[in-house]
Each structure stands twice: as structure tokens, then as C-alpha cells.
Amino acid sequence: MRKGKIHIFLLLPFWVYYILFFFIPLGILLTYSFWLTTARGLVPTFTLENYWAIFSKKLYLIIILRSIRIAFIAAIICVVVSYPVAYSLTFKYKKMQDFVLYLILISLFSSYLVRIYAWKTILGRQGLINQILQYIGLTKEPLSFLLYSPTAVIITLVFIFVPFTILPIFSSLQNVKPELIEAAKDLGANNFEAFYKVTLPLSMSGVVTGFIFSFILSAGDYVTPQLVGGTTGMMIGKIIADQFGMRYNWPFGSALSYFTLFLLALLVYCLIWILKILKLRR
Image 1: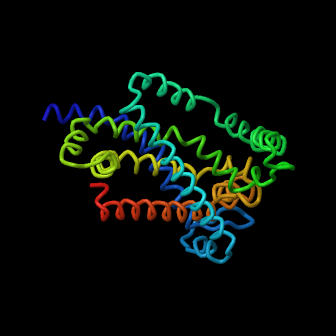
Image 2: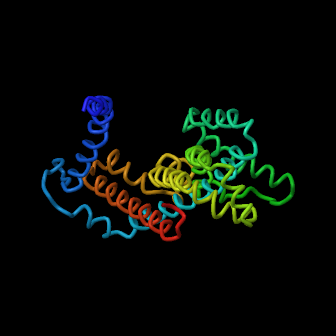
Image 3: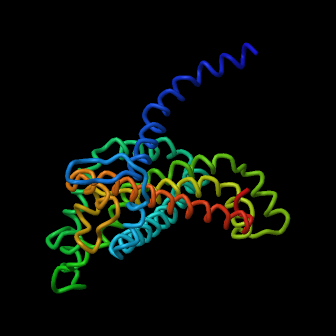
């Protein structure tokens, strides 16, 4: 009993923090989603009008689906890029682990806006990529689709959120013992079979965690699409931010937030369910 009370006491600051700064704000936001906005201000009531308004204009659904598509592509690329890095650091270049992880952590401490503006400069008409392509003769004129497009948003999001994918994958690979891989090879498995049947399933928790991190963070981002996305790369985060900041339509912004959150949670649940069916994650 005494140890149990000590554990509860130690967890008390954690729960107080989350209740004050997470659950209560979410509850307030949920309450707002059932209110109405008039010329006089917010009207406390209970109505589903804000949720029905999401389906009244195709624009909202199009932007939500676009946001999910961009976030999904960015998250897939993050996983594809991050897994070889984490795998190499775990099994091939152990002496470089500390140095590379230090560089990854340094990138997390750098300014978010500076990284976005850096890619805005690189992808611009006079940016580094266009200059290289023109110099080697692949293009005669600067490529305009690199900036202010969904492509620019995906590239920037991948650059920003790759560290959030590398770290959980690297952490999960630490639990894969080399003896298990050697045992699989002794039983007749080649390198690919040993990876697919031993390494990948044991590290799938890190892959799923990294994918979820990059997917949700990308889907909710509104600064990156605003700076490098243009009209074709606009995402739902910008629409939600405008409802609170410019139009003062907090109820509709809250409903749009919860509807998007529900879709993201549903997609994540479906992903985990599919992986369990494929027996890649337990």
C-alpha cells in the first residue's frame, strides 16, 4: 500500500498537468463545437449545425482529404527514409550512433520557421534546386511547381518530421537482438527473410509510432502549407486557424477540429487493425 501511494503521489503532477492543459481545453473546445456564432457573439446552446456545415460545402471535405493525403504521403516517406538510417545506426555503424543522434537532436532544437524558410529558398525559382537543374542542362527554365504546391509541402514536412520518425524506430531496433537474426539464418533464412520475419516485426512498434507522429503532426500543420503550399497546397489547419483568428467563428472551428481529429483517429485505428491482421504488430 505504501509503495502504491508513493506511485500515485509521483504521478500526481503528470495528471494535474494533463487535466489542466489538455483535457479541460479539449472539453471546452468540444463544448464550443455545439454553440452558435451570431452578430452579438457566442450563443451557448446545443446544436449540430456546425457539424452539418462541414458537409454543406465540398471545399471543406476536399481540403480535409487533401490534408490527409499530403500527411499520409509525408509520413510514408518519413518512415522509408528513417528506417534505413535507424537500421544502419543499430547494426552497421554503432560507433557513429552518439554523433548522429546528437545531430538529430540538434535539428529538433533549431527554429521551426527557419527550417521552413530555408526550404522556401531552396525550392524557389532562383533556389538551389532550380539552379542545379539548369546548370547541368536538365531544364532550361526554373521549375515553378517546386514551390507553392503540395510537392513543396510534402518535402518540407518530411524534412521537419523525419527526426520524430527516426528516434522511435531506432529505439525499437535496440530490442532486436543480433542472436535472433543469426538464429534465423542458421535455420535457413536468407538476409531478406531474416529481416522480414524477425527484424521488421520486432521493430514494427517503432515504425507505427513514428508513422503516427509524422502523420498527425503533418495533418495538423498550418504554418508550412501557408508559407510554401500556396492555394493548391492549403491544408485544413489553415482553415481552422482562420475560424478562430480571422472570422471569430469559434464553434465552427471547434467542430472542424473535432471532425478532423475523429478522421485521423479512425485512420490510425484502421492502420493498427490492418497490421494486426497481417501479423506485423502484436
